[in-house]
Image (cartoon, rainbow, N blue to C red; front, side, top):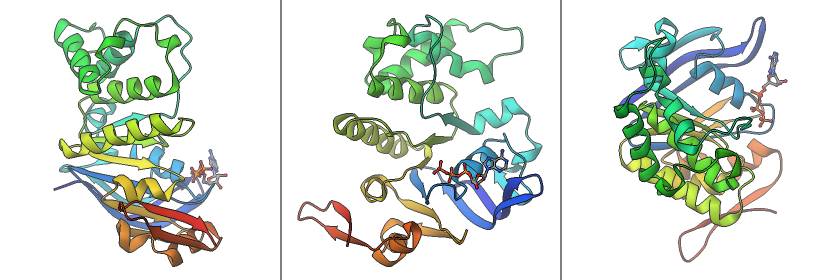
Length: 255
Ligand SMILES: Nc1ncnc2c1ncn2[C@@H]1O[C@H](COP(=O)(O)OP(=O)(O)OP(=O)(O)O)[C@@H](O)[C@H]1O
């Protein structure tokens, strides 16, 4: 089931067009990986989908509505965002931070209620980090922090979660842990759109790839069909091969 549909979408800043003729769907229960070289427009696309930057033309439909017609609280019920990092300047507990994900569900002058706290606790539990609830959020490891940011997005109870390079700066064990959680969330019915500079991550967890090339052409489709050695080489401007190990893992290497 499509939860977001972009058609003839043009993205950019004012009179500066970054990419046009973008067309793709995001479906419930799937992971979509957005790949492309530095500066091609991945962040610009995310900002547009999150309603932070107006589209220049075309359409983005979420549910039955055009994204641009939705109020910020309504948009927040469709899409939640997981940033790469956050600067924790205040002594918030992990639970405080995750409860902040409930903001879109509260009135302007309302404060979180026990049901909001319970939802936040449930999301921490879902990610296996309930034991961190009362920890100082400034004292988390990189991997824990990433899971807390995902829990905060889940507390928003949106159908689509947009993640900006969720494993950047994580060590190997934490990468694997975060990617497994991401896959499990999609298997539970969420639609996850994440950007990555690692095609191997797409092979590992994605159902669909959006590959924005240096020529600003967007290739969309199943991972195996889009991430061929030829297309990957074109995408990154360097000759690449894809090998499948006996255990089924895909390894991308430079020729
Ligand atoms: N506020 C802005 N106004 C005008 N142009 C911008 C603005 N922000 C970014 N750009 C330009 O838009 C293009 C796409 O940038 P964007 O940040 O979307 O790329 P990206 O694919 O996310 O890159 P990276 O992988 O390095 O994060 C770049 O040429 C960039 O210089």
